Image (cartoon, rainbow, N blue to C red):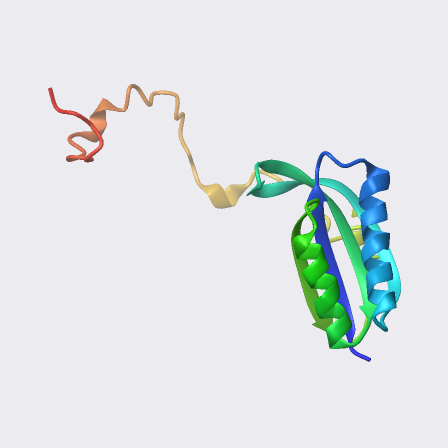
Length: 152
């Protein structure tokens, strides 16, 4: 059977227990249609990059599944119809990675930033001068007609 990974974002006004229950509910929908949930993760409430349905935050859930395509389509259909689910993403993968997802790993385990060490004098920036005498920026001259300003 094909392997899939699903991420869903639920409304922020749900409780943690309700959000986790939502993930379990969709797992049972998948199981009822001949699929199998390999692993689920609740990532918690996270701030989104932009508003979705007037919400800035959402409960994130992640599922690794092994299921036939019709079972996944039915689960996705029900997710999209559910009022509490704002977004759904499903990806077909060749193999599931072992261990927790990147979102669940601690920052120090990830090591994605490397050792920054002492940054030194940052010589690559050049001499930026005092920069204190920037004034009212009147030295810019005529900037042309911007279209949004009214002329008096």
